[in-house]
View 1 (cartoon, rainbow, N blue to C red):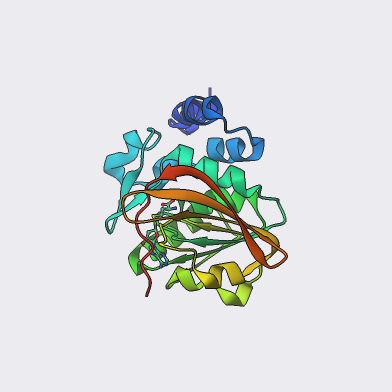
View 2: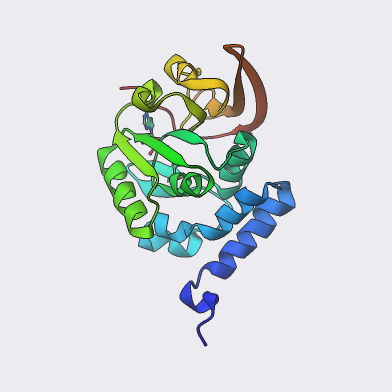
Length: 215
Ligand code: SAH
């Protein structure tokens, strides 16, 4: 018999990840849980790391970069309160894992990655897996992607010493941005809302991301 478990041997691991790492720790946005149940995270890591793809920690993706821990990804997505019609900017495509989740949750995803090799392999991977509403560009994401602004939400997957002003400018009024802010080894996740043209900042939990490198 052709069960879904035979078609994707990682399905059961993904179910376990969603239950024990996400739902049991307070992630309750059903759309986020569904997307994380759906996107094949093992496709976004090197062959040698596949068996660890659903473990409770970040993993290397090449070029000294990492794919974030599933819980941190879910927390960022949940706080962004994404809507199906939203247009999103992502800074730091990396493997394209978060890009794939955004693609399921929103209408249009624009993602900027400074490492050309990571950007190209993410682009190929996302096309192969079937995520059509995504555009990736090589460049310095701290400058945003002004041609498609304003964005309903912005997700920054690398740590900034301060919120890059072009990103705040490219957020629409009422829009939300999630960004890790702080020095190299300890940052806090900040949720920033644009209200009356001003930033309202809420600090969430401590985190550790690779640095946002300008230029
Ligand atoms: N969310 C990614 C992980 C991102 S790791 C995933 O799911 O795999 C952070 C990424 O940000 C790295 O790929 C790094 O190269 C990229 N990055 C760092 N500084 C950047 C900048 N200024 N502009 C664009 N990308 C940047």
